[in-house]
Image 1 (cartoon, rainbow, N blue to C red):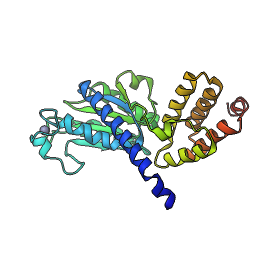
Image 2: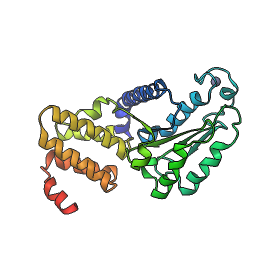
Image 3: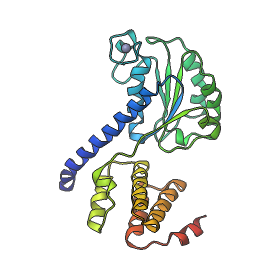
Image 4: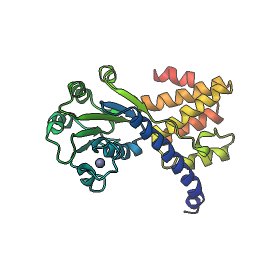
Length: 263
Ligand SMILES: [Zn+2]
């Protein structure tokens, strides 16, 4: 418990950074004029938040999301009769939900001028579910809009070619972007990742890789990149990934040997 208290300030700082990155992502999407279907790569923990935030302006008459139009008045907490959110970061919508989306979006809007749908966890979509979205994303009924949110940029190429893709930029978390120099710092880093998902930790590691490349430490960069890729390929838990990183940093882990066995 005491450990947790010590980390409160750090976490607060991280939350602020996360919020900043989130706001700039929202601003970027808005400034691109979000009137066509799109995909967005961002941490799972922020997917629902993004859907609500963008839903507000997408459904609003003046696109601000904060005038007093019929649509803005129709919000109850985080739900709106013309906003469809299906799936979750860990459990994407299945084939049935995807297939019924066409109908859902075609329904006459209740309060807004259109209906918009956000699909969460789309990096984990099954192939049939992803296929069923091809037609919908190409010819969305009425004034409807479809947005696919995903933690990792994994999409059918045919789907990808139809969508503009926005990406959450790595939050500049002081304590998590600095590469630990000793085991104490590593423990501190572990604490700073306690609320992150595996995908978020992988994002941080991508940042480490660029730093190491900038510093000319190519071997370490390659090893960390390898750990990150393996964790995605084998769907590792965050703990497993962090163990691998520990080994890379302090035990001179032989990745060439490991990857030879795994591939
Ligand atoms: Zn409004």
